[in-house]
Amino acid sequence: MTTKQQADDEIHEDQLLNFLVNTLTGAFSLNIGENAEIAPDDIFEVLVGACADGTSISELCENSEDAPSGTDVLHHLRTKFDFDTVASVGNLLLQRDVIEHLPEQVEVVVDLHLRPYYGDEDETSGLYHSEAKDGTTAFHAYATLYARVRNKRYTLAVRRLEDGDTASSVLAEFLGVLEGLDPEVKAVYLDREFYDGKCLTLLQAHNYAYVTPIVKWGEAIQKELDQGWSRTIEHDLTTEFDGHSWTVEFPVYIDCTYQNGRYDEHGVARHGYAVDAPFIDTPRQARHHYAKRFGIESSYRLSEKTTISTTTRNATQRLLFVVISLLFQNVWRYLHWEYVATPRRGGRRLWQWTFEEFIDMVTRAAWTALAVRRAVPANRPPDDRFER
View 1: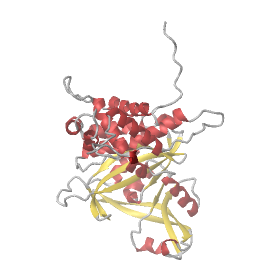
View 2: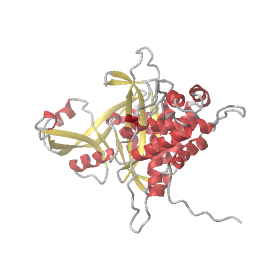
View 3: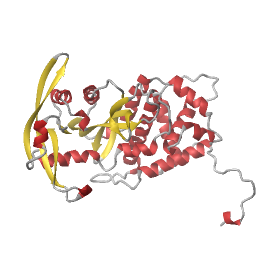
View 4: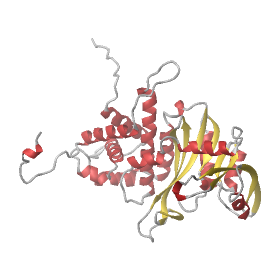
């Protein structure tokens, strides 16, 4: 006779590790071979551990007694993953679980993130080149699409960029993702890199409300942003494509704020935004709504805490690492809301559980599972200074 088990009312560290590893193992089908000394979950356990610890795969495996060979893991990463699969499966992974928790109407944000490349200048093919930043013009570049809900970010898609990719092609792909989702899009907030005629035309064609900072292209708009008070003006951009040109018109909301001595500057700062949104009536509202896009936490700042250390230029591996890093945030927010928050009348109560604590728990679980070295050889026994 079996005894009915009571439901567990706690989530332990090893269960968090299992959740992440099972999620990845179930999404990616790896044909390792029956006689192989390594299994798919071994690979993903190492990837999750390295991601949480912010270390390299080789270093984690070298310092762990129960980890597979780092060489074997890297070999399977090179041979068992292809770019298109990582890109498509990665986006499905990011959307999984969180979609059902999105409200019927969401605000979405399109971001561009550049990770500097400091390698050989002659080995930058396949990278993304842009204006000089942090001492380089070559970058590992990624665009992300995420939903903002109660000042929290849920990443819905990520796309790697390389030379030849345009802002409009990336935006068109992301708008296609939005068309396949159930929630209604209230507005789209975009980085200034997406301020061009093609992008604004796409947004108008899809009938999406949008807000994006403007770029000072041309004397007319520069003059507008160098003088005057807060106001709304009409502006236009002329775009050429396949020998044809067209002009897109849109309002620009110019909001003026006093510097108040910040950054050793004085006078008035003018912020211009291309805006087409029914809930925005004034320049101040435009700046306020756009500022909310940053949320309480920055997804990229958090992702830096969970980035596998690597020097590889392999686009597939780097995209996989980015997907896992962003997945960490989605999983944390999903588990926090679905399992940790207490249901109650009027809304759930969110208990304190920071992303940093979540990462620490996963790291400790990975160290235990892989038997990470906890002691180092000594040439003589430790004396009493090592005792308490």
